[in-house]
Each structure stands twice: as C-alpha cells, then as structure tokens.
Image (tube, rainbow, N blue to C red; front, side, top):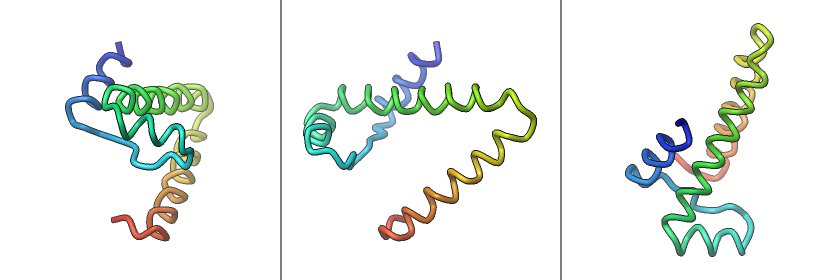
Length: 82
C-alpha cells in the first residue's frame, strides 16, 4: 500500500532526482519520467524500511535522523542548493 501511495505522489507531484553521479543512471532517469518516478519511489521505500528497522530501540531513530539531515544540509549548502 505504501508503495502505491508513494509512487502516485511522486509521479503527480513530479518529484525527481536530478543527478545520481552515474552516467547510465542519469541517462535513464532524465529521459523517462516513469523510470525516474520508480527510482525515487524505491529510494523512498528503502529509507522508510531502514527507519522501521532502526526504530526498534528507544531514541535511536531520532539520533540517526538528525545525523542524516545535518549531512544532507551541509552537502546542499556546499553545492549552493537552497
């Protein structure tokens, strides 16, 4: 159920990954909207599944999430993304 809902939201809201640092993957996700939506949907489902594994211990998920958000913030800040 979560895969169908996430795919529909990603497809209709046009959420995309612009650069995957692999030329073959970049060609696929930039040329086909369906493949791009499937790739983003799978990435989102992997993140959700990983969070469910980590959430078994008290307080571990919030620390993990803060670390990931800080790293993503600094990467975007260094690349000039707003």
